[in-house]
Length: 151
Image (cartoon, rainbow, N blue to C red; front, side, top):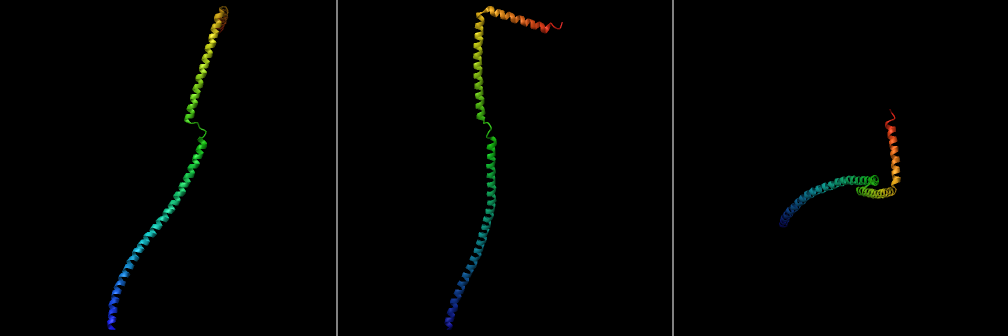
């Protein structure tokens, strides 16, 4: 029995050393796991903080988008009735064309009327002479009334 007790003692020494090695491995794994757990917890905290920050940023962006939409709507209301640069240029060109046409028509009309008057005046020189003489008398009388009445 002593022999078997010795054999058992020798084999238990081997088992004890293996058990001790396993315990050391478990302890080092536990330490590594705790470090990893701390890192994972830190990552979770960072994610939570990022979510909080993102929520505030999202609400800020949403309010900015709403403000821009409101501003663009009010700008359309305020500036919608204003003339555009192209519209003003077109209106100016239309006005210039209208003035040119009016001047051309007036010039043609005046030319025709003067031509008629000259041709009619040439037909009756006696009548023209009579009208001119009468106008000259009126002009002389007006001149004397203005300049010689104070004496």
